[in-house]
Amino acid sequence: MFGTIPSGANAYTKVAVETGVTSASPHKLIVMLFDGALVAVSTAATQMKAGNISAKGESISKAIQIIENGLRASLEKNVGGGIAANLDALYEYMCNRLLTANLKNQPEVLDEVHGLLKDLKEAWEAIGDSAAGRAPAAEMAAPLPRDPLAPQASRLVKA
Image (cartoon, rainbow, N blue to C red; front, side):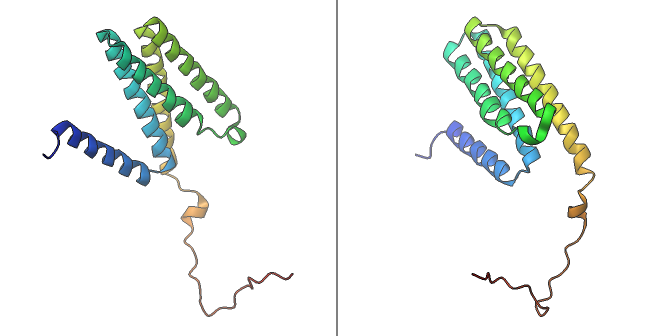
């Protein structure tokens, strides 16, 4: 009548994740992508060891999607220079390794990708911690109050 406990827990988890995404900073969103990829790779390793081929494939596909459509797609290559290019190549490498792990049932390859993702996540979190301690000058300056009676520039455009 009221549904099962697992479906209720899944609904709660989905709402919690959606709420976290909508209220997260861009930096936190990247951390969440790393978390999702790490969980997917760990789940794939567990499924691989258990011999559950279809679940292993689904988890590896999920990890690849997160890396390709989340982490890799978020790179700003025109702004990030060499760092962005290196990360792009590393993300491509990880996806290729995940495909290899899936095809050849190699848990050590999953461990390799998991280690790379973990290291990148830790570095990303360290960057966030140091960046959070210092706000940009534009954010530090308080905006001047607007005087509604002061003369304003015209918004009319002459033809």
